[in-house]
Image 1 (cartoon, helix red, strand yellow):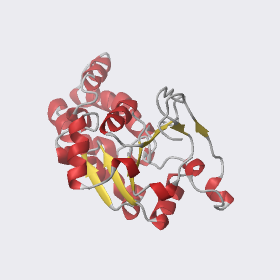
Image 2 (image 1 turned 30 degrees about the vertical axis):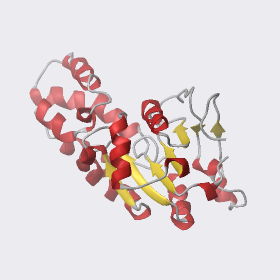
Image 3 (image 1 turned 180 degrees about the horizontal axis):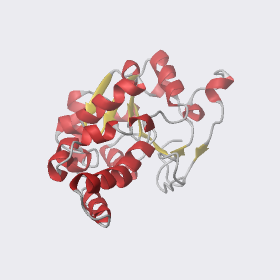
Length: 237
């Protein structure tokens, strides 16, 4: 599906793409509301109010900012995340994919909405950093990936040719923003959260396993359990 000779840069999302989104989904929608109620000694019904408050910030820098939520909710978000850090883990064959990219030598950039506090928690636990040429957080650029300004700022910081760039992300709004900017090769993720049903991505190809997009002729253990679902209007052909 991909002519790797046409790819100079690979931009990768972190949560839901390289890492299982289960940790984040569980933390923000279950663990944090429950611990907030416990710490502030509030009624259990308050949990739903906290969930709604969190979801109102979806797609903004606040949504991704641990400092913002620590301040707004009066709790130590990083400490609460560490309570369930055992849930942080790589998706499927993400490590095999990263190892192959490292040997194949395109420039590999983590382009994430996670802020630096999130990165400081997750990178040491996952070992992602050793396979990346650069890490760029939307917090560094002052605008989330959902906005066009992110891509212009990223290109200034990490020059790349959109026509020779592959970007993989589980968020369809982010993929649409990348497409509007002109990035040619785009892939979504079919099941970002291993505990939730697969997602429908109408506009983009949805990837089950990274092995599917690796060149033919690789060892079977690298390409095992492959699966790729194309949708009408997809950006890779």
